[in-house]
Amino acid sequence: MILVAILNDCVTLVLGTDRTTITHQPESWNLAKLSKIAGILAIGWSAVGYGWLTWLQQLGLTTDQISTGLYVYLIFSAMLTILMTRTKKPFWANLPSRAVSIAIGGNCALTLVLALTGWGIAALSPALVGLAIVITVLTGIVLTVIRFAARI
Image (cartoon, rainbow, N blue to C red; front, side, top):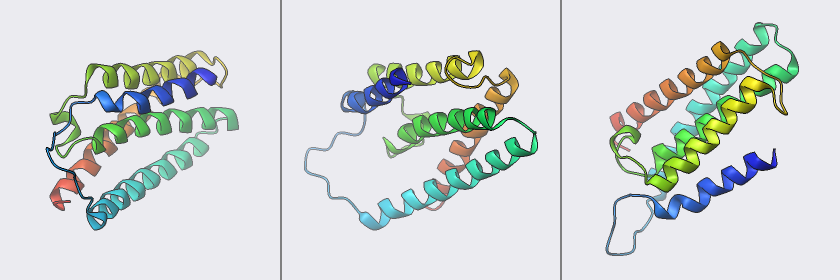
């Protein structure tokens, strides 16, 4: 699990290399707008995560497998949240830098290896891992659409 922590730190460290909008003057943060975005993301990710947890429990999985299912959801949602909040455009409209892409991709790849092989955590079926990823991406798209529809 130390490798997971190192990769998470790498994502944070390489954000300075990212391709985002350059401003030539100091930016002032609009805390009301920032709070609205944070609220949308927190409520959306939490609601879907709780639904995912409830569904995993109903499948009759072991506690360890449920933990792995939540781990996959949380890592992928965290990586997607980074992509969603790094730019003023929808996350799919502005590609990150190569370093950010590699760090996020490495983190997601390691998560897949751990979840599918059971190395250090309980293994999950490829179908459940894939479903967690699909749910995460769809949630990210919906939350982005809500953010832009609300003009936040």
